[in-house]
Image 1: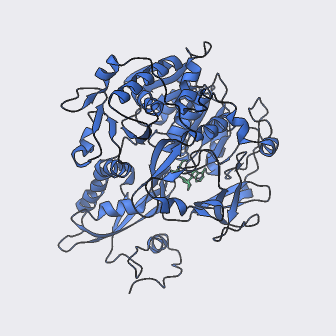
Image 2: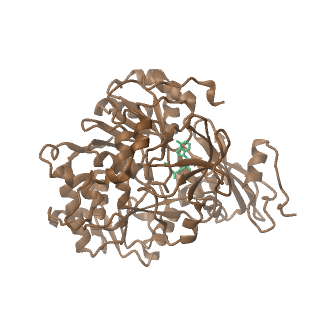
Image 3: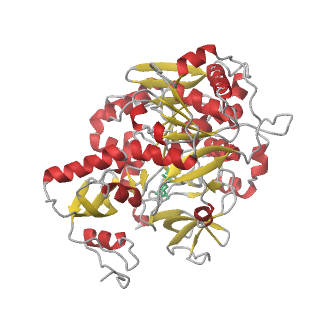
Length: 571
Ligand code: PRX
């Protein structure tokens, strides 16, 4: 199946990594460490490396660091501007007693203020927790509760989704844009008073900087904890995979509420001193092509779901825009279909480079590189310094072409260091010295990795990771729903859609209005991307004798597949 498309040879050019094999064989993380500036104390800070270091360089300080563009706002910040604004916000945090290790969450749309406050949090040594702006009350509550965040930065519009009174640890709320009544702290007022000078909190590489909540197949979302050390990986993958050069204009389409939007929407470009485009507002093909053309984007990191939407919008839309600034295109989040790669060749005259990694891994692990031949449908080969393998359920390596668990040898800079307050969950990722990803894959005889699917029940809808348990829990809060089982159903554009099977409580009848009401209930409670697109009413939901919902069985029914072993099925 993998060989139905010919390899696409690398184009010759001046790539940062000229030869994959050589780079892989000689690579040392210790060498990457030498790229960074170390304070006299022997300590570091990722915000200093990403921004202040360039602001202190006379040749770079006036370069645009952030080009923010949205339908109603355009703003450019230089490295110097970003340094001063984040210094000011760090002073605001200090004034309000935020200290190293405190959790400060951000819940707001992409804006210049998001980036200034995010960096300010890192500068005081606190831990930033970015929340996707589409989250509704339950999703916000779960994350603030679990992290015991003491401060939240948000906007007046989003405030109604924050149950501040019910979160005992949440002592302070900063409001960006608009009035700040009562106990709220006004961002604008505080910034006006704050000094531009700030002495950065120097930290150890192993000190925390970021919490990203992500979903598994059971339980509530988990706080994936990342440390400053990740900068080594962000910097080097930015150099070799994104192939960033100082004069690039780079655009990562991911929201910073997700890991791609921080590792590659903030750190990788700025650690490499590159101009970073942030586009606000909603997706539309015209808007996205327009952004590339207007901002002269040269390196573009996006996702299969977006490419598929552009593909189905047709070539005429693409032809209206001058895309000649693009020189390098990359993808992450879901399998990159060979058809999309073929489309990319004609739409951009460029290869789309697939990259594989996860929230937990903090940075790219298996990638396609500009100078390496690409096999469409393959995720590529391990990044230098990364040992990847396919292992069986005991952690033994499997030979080429055999499907199994995609696993990575423990110990790389951007790896999560903990699951927040959940050591058992953290331990459960490891087997025999391997980090086991939960994805199944195989490796061909030439070392290329091929993604096959998830081994657990986690759903990947339009590149966003959704835990079925979270959706099921919300569904059964609806007055008409007795039980619920949720699966991912294959979909040509979104990868998967969420399908819910429910049973109704006594006294409720099936109707289109009821189903729509249930859908809206999840949408308003959790978020739009977690709301089931399909809901089917059943008489019973299959469960094991111990009461676990058998999602696998629901999926087999849905897809008309053999049901396999059902010996644990409840009578
Ligand atoms: O199943 C894999 C899929 O997305 C999962 C990780 O999701 P998340 O933590 O939200 O991070 C997404 C962005 C880093 C993986 O376990 N996935 C990610 N990249 C790929 C992929 N599946 C296939 N091909 C990829 N390139």
